[in-house]
Length: 152
Image: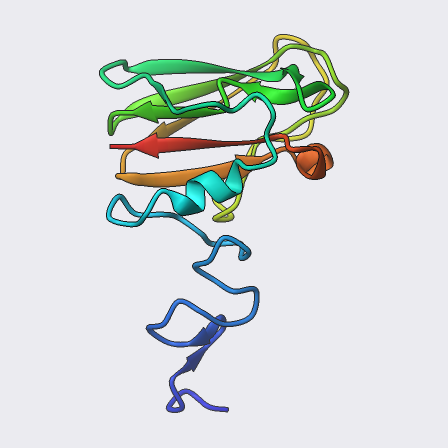
């Protein structure tokens, strides 16, 4: 396969799909756009026991999310797990020191935090573009330690 066959490093150019199902919930580069159904978000959050609804935090410049909050059979949750924010909002994840080592890893492969168990540690990210950003804790993803930031 050469440069003229339309294939890029992630499959056929222009499709967004290829190895790893780029652009899907299962691949490393998923980002839902506002025009898409919320079914994908609901599917992502289906095994998160502390998720009931999107928590509206629009209009704020900074929003905090606890890491290692109570949920999923221990201290294996983000609280709140799903937030809605305005473009330009900075989200700050703050470690509780409970539940062992956690991180904030984005499904789309963008900048993520380091693994830590230190109470008071934090990680910040500013969200400038509209979309839904899915994330999880690498060691506890299978327990349901997942979350999302919906930027509208």
